Image: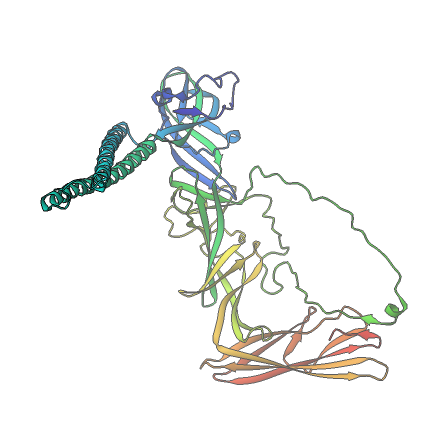
Length: 567
């Protein structure tokens, strides 16, 4: 049985094909014209949907006619379906039809075999019932004979003590017992056979019921009504959007010497039910039909009160960890004078695969390489003694035009047909997970934020096992006569190079930064060190092979009287 589950919506001239004109219902749906075969030609995946271009060939006759093009998903967005043709015809209406078929699990021959099996099982049940009834009657008869024998023997018949009379009574009792045992055995066999027959009947009935069940099978097609001025064979091209398909960017950074090869992959999924085989795949950052609302403004209530005399007489200083927010890196070379934000020029970014791909409708991810660039990198060993005892390999890069990169804007093709080499077209780097590797060895995973074109950024490539660092802090505290406080701290960093190769290191430390005039912080005894406005202290040192070295710096904290320090 087939049921039309949707009233169609038309595009084009009204009155062409009323909703009830081709309603699909009952057994007649199976005898209707089969939809035309079609294939997906190109697919553009967005953040939460996909746009499909599908083509089909049809033989037209002169006059008005209707084409049914199959192979489309049930999740087609009816509002954006478009149709085009190259022949001597005019398209008057386009609509999506959805049908749910009820398909039986088994065929007619299998169901008839199950019916015969169920009837045979019911016959065995009836035979078992009759056998059980006969066995029950025999058992009852044997019980009655035993009762009668007991009644007769209780009356003490004449000559009971004679051997020949006693032998006849014993023989009669043996016959009664044998009949009772035979009746009980027959009853037990009948009950067992009845249980087996009932089980067979139940299983046969369940199999028959399962075979008669109907499973819903959803099907959709796009109906195109057109008027042809002459008979011709034409190509109909459909463009529509469908849900249950998406993509996300992923990167692979490979460090080789002083260059980083950065490959961008599009990880795509689809569970639309369509067959996307050898399609031209594009991956867009556009958000079609996305509704944006401005943020709501709320009142920011401020309160004011007078300070107490105790609060006016002293300053309480609080210490906090502050994350320094910057638009990109302060170091590295910028390829543009003014850095763009997340804006990509007001046009969506489109990446295209370099060769046709096959994306099965299984919900499993498929990775497609869409861009590759080779960037010069400033590679250095960085130590953070306060947080880690090892050295980190850091590469600073600039997202500029690299050798062998690929992407496109506004749908421009960016991939070669062979896929061996991707064309050069510098683009921003999209945010996503990144795998980092040194040569052929994968060393870890991380996250990459949005990197605009020409913006510097950094990537970490794991730790260097041959370098070790240890940190020690010494503190002296003095209280002045008028109540001021002076704290002197000395930070000593012990560096060790366990390898046979000289290394150049960047050591990164930090000191507090004062935001009030009552507290002053100054760097002292810091030969080879430099400090920036955010309190980060940097020192560059060279370690020879198998060398251990101690470097240090100091800083002083001065607080005026009436100031309460948090440490």
